Structure formats: structure tokens, C-alpha cells
Amino acid sequence: MTSLTEPRRQPARSSHESGRADAARAGGGILGTARRFVAAAGVHEVLLLAALWIAYSASRLIASDDLAQARARAVDILHLEQLLHIDVEHWLNHALTPITQVAVPMSFWYATLHYLVTPLVLAYLFFRQRPEYRRGRNALVIGSALGLICYMLIPTAPPRLMPDGRYLDALALTTQFGWWSGQASAPAGLGHMTNELAAMPSLHVGWTIWVAWAVWQHTNVAGRALAVFYAAGTTVIVIATGNHWVLDAVAGAAVVAAGIAVASWWDSHRRGSAPASS
Image (cartoon, rainbow, N blue to C red; front, side):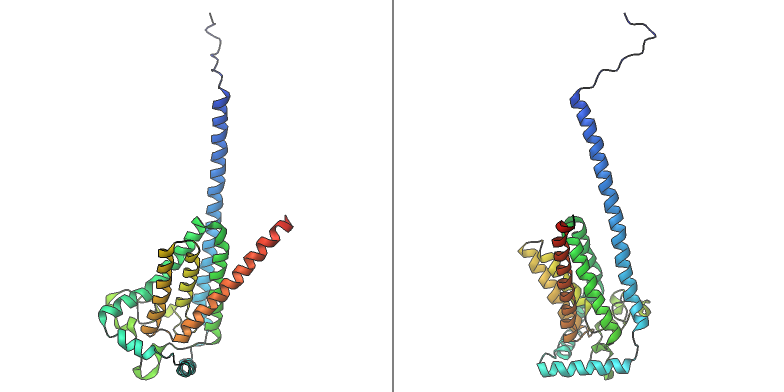
């Protein structure tokens, strides 16, 4: 018989149980580390994109607000379009904007989707396509930065700010149906925070090109068709609402395409040099 004072011995654990416990601890450590990494990386990315937004907002303080000069630049753009026979702004604007049932959805699209779709696709790359995220983020940042430089160097009036009311302002005519104002796509009461002479290039269009490029690589035919429709639809809407010239849309696509090219070259160079440096 065992003594009453003798401590009870714990049954020895099998090697199988010990292995499971060690694996659980290791797994918890790996998952914890992964969670901490994602949290840290997420904060870093949010701060980076917040800095880009601050730079965008600050550009209105640096850029010229000379409306006469911005209108003169817009006239030059229109003359070039007339030479190229692509000056469809007036026809498209007056064909669609007077129809309330069309103007309201166009205003909603213009004032909303670029704020929603672009971050959603960026988040998709971050959480589901992490190896491609850095290249995608860099492409967006570089293309947007090129656009901001253009806003500061060549302020250009959109069609809706041209004299004599030749072009209709769809958002201003439909403010009672939504939260937008008559000052670009800014919410009502926040018009002072937007640069209304930032027509050239159209980052509305540029960002849709980025979305189409990012989505194209990771989806099926239906997803690709939807991405192309989003880019084409936005291009029509920015012109029809009186917010951009045709060449603004072309320039917006060009600056983002340049951002994609630079980011892709940078990513390829970084991946190519990684084995050599390790």
C-alpha cells in the first residue's frame, strides 16, 4: 500500500500526446507571429495610403487656382480633340445629363465607386494575393503621384467650369438626390477640400485601369468582363457628367499605365536580385 503522505504520481504521458502538445504550442506560436505580422503590415499600409491621401488633399493648396488660365488650358485641349475628331464631350453631356433617371446613377457612380472599389481591390491583393500586393500597391501609388504632379503643374478646368454654361454639371443638378455637392465628387459641405481644377489627368479613369489590371490577373472571364465594364463605364461617366475631357481620360490611363510599368520593373528587379543578396 502507498503511504497517505506520498504524493500521487501523474500518469506518464505518451509520446503521441507530448507530440500533439508540442505541435499545438508551435502552431499557436506560428499563428500568433503571423497575426502580429499582418497587423503590423496592415498598419504600415494604412499609414502609407493615408499619407498619399494627405498629399492629394494638400495639392489643392499648392496648385494654382487661376480659373482663367485653367480655362485657357482646357480650350487648348478641346482644340486638339477637334483636330483628332474625338470632341464628344458636348454631345454626350447634353444627351445624358438632362435625363434625371440617367444623371442620378451617373452622379452616384462618379461620387462613390472610386472610393469603394479601389480600396476593396487593394485589400483583396493584401489578404488573398500577398505576393502580388507590393507591386499592385506601388503601381497605384506611383500612378497617383504622377497625377498629383500634373495637377500642380498644369491645372486644367473641367467642362462644367467653362464659361457660358455650355456644359451641364450633372452632380450639381442632382445634389438633392445624394450626398455629393456641386464641387467635384466631394460630399456636401466639404467642397473646400477638393481641387476643382484637377481635370488633367483623370485619376477616376486611371484608378479603374489599375483595378482592371489587378483583377484581370486573378479572376475568370466573368470577372475580367466586369473589370473592363467598370473601366469603360467610368470613362463614359466622367465625360458625360461634365467633369473631364476625353484627353483627360487618356492621360489618366497613361499615368497609371506608367505606374504599373515602373512597379513591375521594380518588382522584377527586386526578385531577380534577391537570390544574389541572400
